[in-house]
Length: 276
Image 1 (cartoon, rainbow, N blue to C red):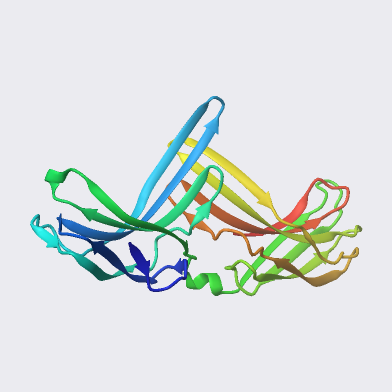
Image 2 (cartoon, one colour):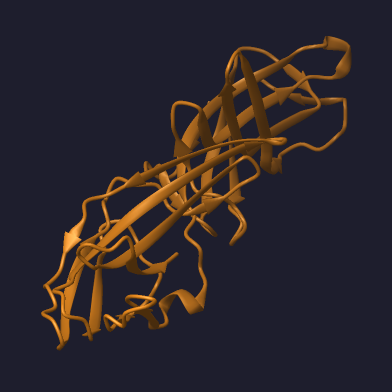
């Protein structure tokens, strides 16, 4: 039986999992190894027409070997408690994720390995847990500015719209509030409207086969900008709590995009700024 020192089942990059393997025996057990490990596993399934494509990858395996490779080890009668420490990598692992056709899963596994002549291993225990592994990049905490300009009318000069968007940072967590600080220079004879929206794109890929799904969250509307003036405002965009973190794995990637839009009535063009 595997017993962890903590009941916490949500871990992050660089955490250490500590606990003990408890073995209770009525007699003598001959074995070659007692192994506790962390396994990280991902899979994706893509359905295209009548065909289904599967991709899977064991991207992480961290072992704690109690006994070693000798084939003549024995454990006697009684209760034996064997402590272990298993570290998660500091970086380079994806966050846990679960959907209908794809998943990233982590578990702690215990195994008693008998000498080869017995031809059977006995699993001690398997404990699933969740890993939150955000991208730790200093540049994500830096402010960002985006500027764009659109000329309205190619033959008759109807004016131009210029927009400047400032973010205090461009890396956010579930539950955060994204403050979109904008200035719009409206040099047209029309009132323009402003809005911001967060979206998520999930990409599954198995070989040359891909499947993409984009979810758009609620649109947040800003102030209208009247003709011929410079207008400014702030839009608060809430990051939902129950969303997976951005991630990049072998068969699964999750990305987010914040899009600020200036809509010009009666025109088939938009002034858009995106932050990924």
